Length: 472
Image 1 (cartoon, rainbow, N blue to C red):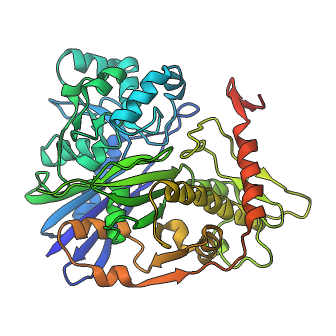
Image 2: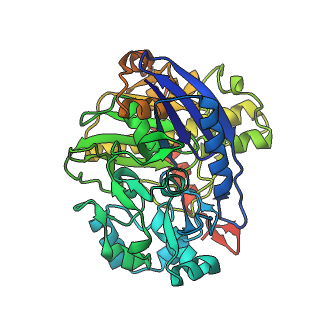
């Protein structure tokens, strides 16, 4: 059996062909553009995403089934009759609805937490879809004519490519519109955000089938982070993984009951046909790989080889810190106004020092997620990581030291694709078990964490006034 595992991510669309003999080959990978039409806005062209999916799938050649991972909270509107997109994709990083959500009463925020488990944050799809209905004339017109469809990117892809207007339960749990207790769209939350429930896709299980693309069945569709969780072999309560892609996303399996999460998020990990949903807690750093890409554009480094080979004391030990809050801070702060900061530079600071501080800043912020997760749902002493940053041995070793946990880096880096294939029924245990493990070495101490915490406090004191950052 051969599976085309398509990872439609924030910056690229990749397709791996994975067979039941355990062999995985990259068929194709295509990058796509991101647009920033106004401060806080992040958009993509839905037609470009569709073209890229078609191209990487064509490069895969004959396969027995298809599995697709989506970006999660990124969403759009389209015409039910023509299938034409009526809006750009509003990407999960987009913060255009922050002020509108902040103006809502605390009772609405409490209601959201109670029903779907999510805060009122522009990260999630609900307020983005609401914004489209209020601000996009084509969307308003299609709604009045009874032709409007709204949803996350997976629903758009499946509608256009496979003729099925549907999503899976895990993706639906990222919208801010799902009732976790019933597994259905919440009339209350749809009303709160002004999102017409009859314009949303049907919700199904992860492996229930999603139509066919040119005769090849689409067996699995799910959020990329949940696919990676499954790919890491995190199936039991306490199992935890962190994916370092554009952002950094921690998911830890909690079981079949809704977890008490504090400032973290309850989410559906997956729901298979005929089985109860498996739930998890989730927390994220908005800017991980995105912070590195920003540093590359600034000329702080040019090649990934420069993310290793550092000598001497850590940057944080020498008083140099970077707070990676280019898009604000996610859990446990939920502060979109926090500003990215380099602190502690002097005349001797070089580019390599700043890159090192950036790597450490992502790791130290991630440690705060680990500690928050541990407080509400105890996780094991080993955490599995993947994504671009996991390829830096310095980063993995520093994360082990900072978290005081073993950090496991699988040799197979494409964990989202691996999870998709496993959800299709392929046994890839051997590929998952080939990993390097980094152990704590004592190079990060309490004072290092305290110094970074002071940096976060400084970052949160900056606020935007007329598009410029200023102290309160």
